[in-house]
Length: 193
Image (cartoon, rainbow, N blue to C red):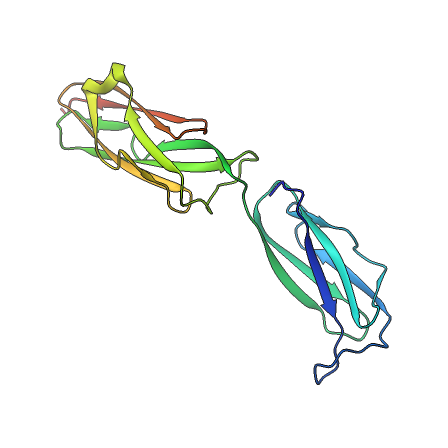
């Protein structure tokens, strides 16, 4: 997504036995199902020459699956799907499955970090970026990361588990990786009644 790379889409007109129809010179019409994912260089008025016709697909800034169809008089409509992949990750978003932990050293919460590219696409193709979860120094007395403090993302995601201590107060967590904008989140520990 967001790159200058183009995908060349070529279509060959063939007869029922799969042989090229070299004397077919009609006009092909290409169309993208979701123009938010990219644009075609030629959407119509592209003539077959020597049984073939082609166009270029230029991705937009949005990742996803781009459906493209081509139709021409007397030929069956054909469709293909191109994957518009996210770019390299530039930031981390951090979420927690609970905003409160009991201050009893037993209650846990799961931290989830997701990587995003410069256009806000989830970087689900990344399984190589190292990531570290940490509690800020000023709130370490209220919690501890019990698993997953450091590791490598898988499909753009990583997780860790945090546990509260017997003290009540806020816990500030940061997920970081060299070269990426860090993600941060907060939860609190409370005394059960």
